[in-house]
Length: 315
View 1: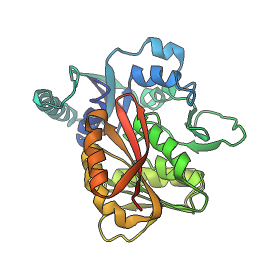
View 2 (view 1 turned 45 degrees about the vertical axis):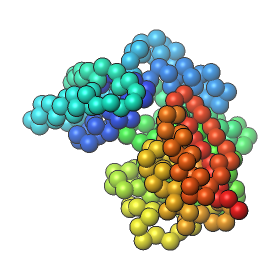
View 3 (view 1 turned 180 degrees about the horizontal axis):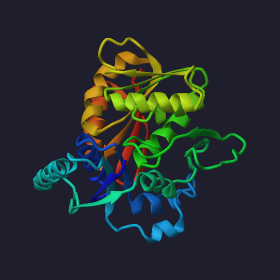
View 4 (view 1 turned 90 degrees about the vertical axis):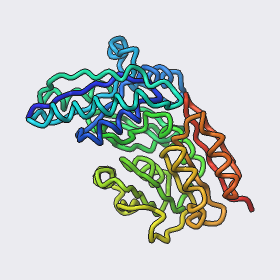
């Protein structure tokens, strides 16, 4: 089967919104090409070899969100709907620059589509111990390394985005051997899997998106962690009684503000709520919501335009 590649020109801040538009239109996968991710990561002591230098030379100054659709009779209508939605977003006051939101398309052969992902991704370190590697790359672990195997290509985190990267740094700090953890809005399952690798004895990875649940379950099995990580479809707040020492939510500021209160009943005494996906402009809102719910922020990380907070309930 041949595929249609749709490429939207946007900004770092707009990339996740555009990716959601494309996935909601029926894309089977998205990839975000952002020079900032690469150049900022190269300056970090924690990451290396994320992208070949030759590839960097050819990357656009714009952030490109690439999506893949089946090249069939419905494709023209699908792309028209995508253009309409992008036009609507362009007229909204998002509070930040969304870029041009122009849409380019081209046909891609099945084999080319399968191979295009691979040139961008190399093993990289997230924090001090966690290493993320794609399945096609060999990696010789160093002493103390905890290696997770995740492939890019779906619209879920593989650790390269600042918000996911900071969550893994926080998990290294707060996950202790034998503890319990919950990953709310788990996507690929990367954070729940990281918690398991760091020593958590029981991890619940939960998401409302059925595709996310499928991908997370596959990644759990691939990494041999099915005995520790339970993947579930649903809402943490509905009919679930699990409690955990660490709860992590890498979502968006509005959802985190909403979760602050209800999450309390799921935290064990002394537990930590790690929340990420917070644009700097919304940090104050999240800080207020945490304080109103009785939390004290005990650690703050910031990368690029994003903030990640770790909070505990006041004694």
